[in-house]
Length: 563
Image 1 (cartoon, one colour):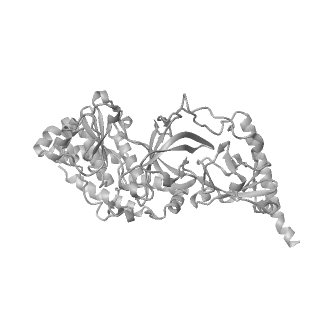
Image 2 (cartoon, helix red, strand yellow):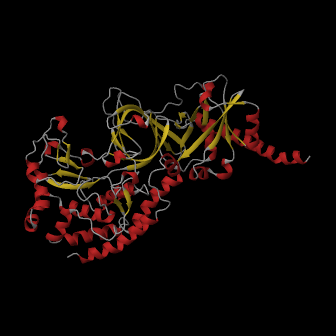
Image 3 (tube, helix red, strand yellow):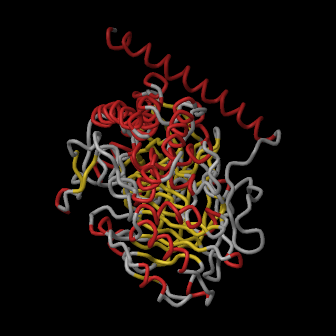
């Protein structure tokens, strides 16, 4: 009698949950039949590629009689389902999970479901199972999620138990929730090198309660210099069409393009410095009316390579001629500085128009492979004035060869971010309208980190004294020293940024916390740490906060001292 009495609440709970599931399923069916938005948008090859296409109500490969009805089940119901069947592995059963008709990505035998803040536990009834075995499968979802809530599964990187049952067998599958988009390529990490390798690319992103999937042929390669020698390398992704040509697609709300960068953010202890720095430059460019802005959009994503989880990456637009709207017919050019060697101006002048590189400078536009002439003369003039001329010669000629406002803003940016690795190298130099402008990239050595040259320790460390020194971007420093009015102009810029909530210590800390919380609340931080245990990781943003606050006090005193 005691055992029977104890089972009554469990049986009642199971009955109630089953009734709720049936009612919700009925409501969903009515909504779908009334013309609700379809679940998946897949970009196809051919005419119109790169545009958002109408979604198919159901994927072509899915037969209606293979869809398993989803239902919530308590621990008792799950136990009964197990004991009545033979256990098998999801792979042996050929299990594929779909959400509202979109097949989910898998990594290491686990299924990933990107969700938004609008997602509720009852939306899991949009799941279905497909199997390679005979018989119609049934999908059972652990009802404990109504008690704990989805946020607990996210934050603790805890999989939700999903049971796929046929008449005679069952398979238990782990469903991982994430609030980040998921990228997948059918190319194992150990096959990716400095040469492009073809692959099939897919991207899943949550849109409200729905899921969008984008598929495309693509190519992957390792990119970077010292970072390419680390375990987790940055990657370059190129989208292609069926003929192997570049395909421009608008991914994750960013610009339509075929070239994308996956920044590993591996050496940075907090994994947010690149994101914070690039966001700051974009805000500065808008607030200070810099033209062109040279701003890049970024998004954190999770990556699956060859069926194995590979961690989170900062996906970003590629800095190129499109970023700045360059026009070769107007004499515009773009150069990337890849080392600390400052080229001599005479050597730059000797370069033929289609020369691809000289010393530390690589020409990125016009592309020498396109047989288009490019101008080295203005860059040579800029180097001669900034690095070879005396103070009076610099003051007399630099404003004819460099954009004054851009140069002062770049000096201010480097000093706000403490970007020790960007005062000459890791900078794009563009000739626009006959003048040189500077733009940042690769900002992991910033906000208090220094370079130790030791690949065993991922090159970076928390370096004392970084908050109480200047960062010597030479053109900006010499403008402040030799050109009247530049110091007041920088001070005015800083006040504008502070007034708009962009450049104060609290503003930068708030931006870092947004990215930090995004990585942690999605569970991606824990998964990345498991995948890359040798990477630098910290348990808090305390060092970032302390460094930025110290920097603000020191830098404001320094600005006040400028004449």
